[in-house]
Image (cartoon, rainbow, N blue to C red):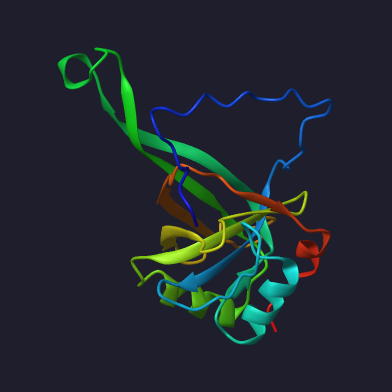
Amino acid sequence: MDNLIFACTDDLDQPAIPSCPTDYGERVVAFAIMKDGGTFTVAGSDNPTAAEFVTAITAGEVAYYDGITNGHKIEQGATELGGDDTISGGTERNDVMYRVEGRLKLFNEAVKRATEKLDKLSIIRLWYFTDKNYCFGGKEGLKASPNFSEHIIEGKGVPPYIPYFFDYTAIGADYANYDADYADLVNP
């Protein structure tokens, strides 16, 4: 995934005002992960297509999880410099941290075991999908830290769930790709 390329002599980008803003969705409904250093071939675009995910999932390079509730992406914070530490004396933000989190609601013993193993890894590659069939993560996936809890049973009337979150540092580009077939992805 390419970071934004910027030179101090470049003109500032002129943003266009769209007649209708893009509806990226309101919820994270699924995610795909790969071990850091895995191979996943993406041809041409900034994000994998649904067909490329199907090939990688079938080959065992990528694992796909859905059945998520309360999925969302939030900012966790950043390193801030100010005063004498900056040229302007103003505040500068660096190393902005984001979190993708939610609850796995559809799971069985195999999913529980898989998340327990994932929790032992320090870095994975992450792509996450919204309810409007957008995928974020770019060609290579976001370098993220996986954190999964054991399954939680709150009591009568509340189905058990596995809370999870992934933390990652912003890379300077937030690639999004739409593919109507993302909704059809499944693990074999």
